[in-house]
Image 1: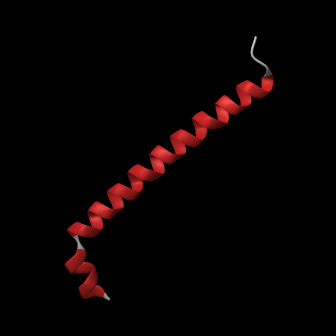
Image 2: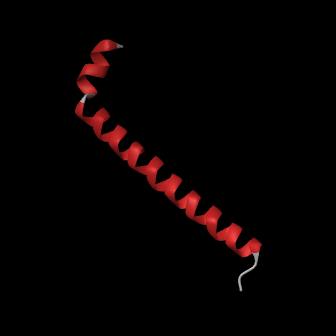
Image 3: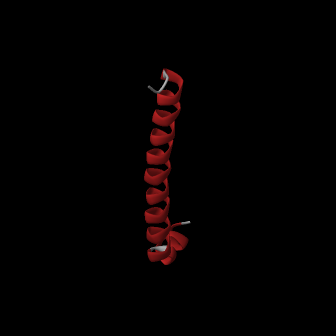
Length: 45
């Protein structure tokens, strides 16, 4: 049987992976919006 430590490490690994995927998708989505609206953001500044 796996020890509590092993289960904890696996759980932390899963959570960290999910967070990385979510943050990465938001970053990619934000970059795409920046590329789409480059002219409008430059005009506002």
